[in-house]
Image (tube, rainbow, N blue to C red; front, side, top):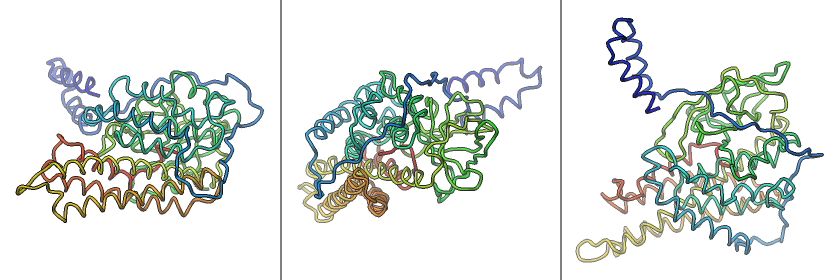
Length: 431
């Protein structure tokens, strides 16, 4: 967008436009571009095509039910979490401030993240992944570890796996054969789960985006908001109201005619490079309908997405706690550390207590989902705690740092902005 504005600004200052009578229209265009950002065509996409024929969809089996609620990670989970935690500390945390300022992840960071193989965990072995059973708990632990580094960049890293996870859970054999091989190779495509719309009190079960049947498939019209890495994404899973019958999910390649992207910087999650996805008369084939348009499929997707946001909230809240504890112990006032003041000590204790409750409820919901048990109640509790307590923890972090909490020298102001997104976002991530 910067290059486009620069070129238009130079052109607007040329004498040629006066002779052509184009000064006023060009000035209006520069003004609109500055305010709203340019809309551009979807990213040039690779050619998604089948590399093997599948007789039936490949699914991951539910995890075994041991009869115990045990949050102790397995050896494999512990190894994965340690690897991701190290990556988040060494790669995401140092890059977060720059990504927040520039509204994009640093060059090469996301490709290095893809090398971790995060998306492979949820893809069955027969399709090139490493998954043998549903791994909702592992995915929650990974999301939490990434968000401890930075929530915005964590969303950018996890966005492709949201699409691959949905394809494994609900894609038919043709959809899996067409798209999943790309997620197991070296060059994992940018992809996004687009549910969010720019509407107050948005209900994901009542999307304003419309889908209608055509002789060759479906036509989609609408606008999706706060889509992570929208400008770079090659594949979207989009929710739309199917002819007034309720929400359904559609696979949309970014190169499809009628797809355009508009930058949409937000208060938080700026490292995720969020944008608007415009769908104007987008025609997709009949085989693009995911999960047969069933309501229970859409319901599970929304719940697993909300669970993902709860795990992300827990990770960033843990980052706040880990930052404020040494700060209040080292910061002195009136000759002693400020942690000696009851108000400060109690505030830090409240953060720890609420964080522990959020983690327990989130992991309990993940464990039930992983085992194929009903988990609606647990997800609702996790989302409620993530929305209320996550924002409370972010605010407390800013308060505990006093004036330092208001400046960008310390990361708590960014974490506060990011945590406010938990109560707004739908989609984007999926466990």
